[in-house]
Image (cartoon, rainbow, N blue to C red; front, side, top):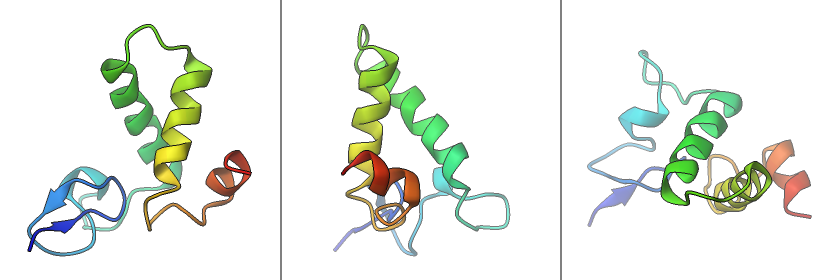
Length: 79
């Protein structure tokens, strides 16, 4: 059974987080870093979407991830 990163949902072999979501010591990157990288990915995936749409979609996705679903910015955005 393949595990999934609790931050971004990518398939991983083991552990809680993938290499893209962790820093050089293996700790989960901070929210702002992950949000910036995830919105950047969302921009590439949905060209033509407004910045507001991209941020809203990213926060909605992050709300489904165990690492972020209780983060204040995610909770506020999904009310």
